[in-house]
Length: 296
Image (cartoon, rainbow, N blue to C red):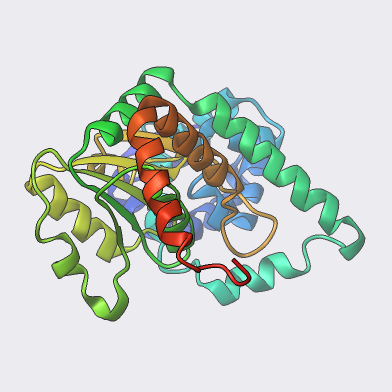
């Protein structure tokens, strides 16, 4: 049994209903602990994927306060507590619940401003998270790859399609995994060492995507994972991880920041292989010049 302040807990209890225990012991918390607890109760879905720094900023307390709170509950630290929160909300963060929560959160006359401000903040945070070494290695891996597979399931498919269509204009052997008609086994069964997969994965993580990535890794395919800022759940699936902030003012993730990162990768790849890029563009232009566009 662990004893902290006025509250005593058995460690094995923490793997149960986190929020039920939180409310049951609320009266025993200090003032600052109650402030943290109130926020956790009201923002379960977001907390599951917030970094320590972001959570502390949103609550208006120090990171030390959040860490101490997690230890009061018997966890080793914030990451340990967050894993339990993720286990609790994974099946509860249904889209109707998110919609009900966010639809009335922001007044209509403030929605435009807050939506743009949110995306600008996401872009700025994502920029600050990038490491030059990881970006350079990712660009080199894609440039040198025999085949480039691009993966994105459900909402992530839109940005995966965008990336695949753009680099497909400047690099040969780019394959978008479409999963149309569930044909993805045939789309990936030729994967081999020397290939690269660029995968977009954001909460809620798709099991089909992790199955494909596991298969790729078993074949020696290198994986560049573009994912959410908190990578605890998917860190083992990527050789290089490019984190993005995808918080939103509505019920779905915002992909403004991943799109900016994608645009950078496209531009960097064109610079890395200018001769191949130009040759590919010339071939594309020759095809389009055969009367593809109306009036030409």
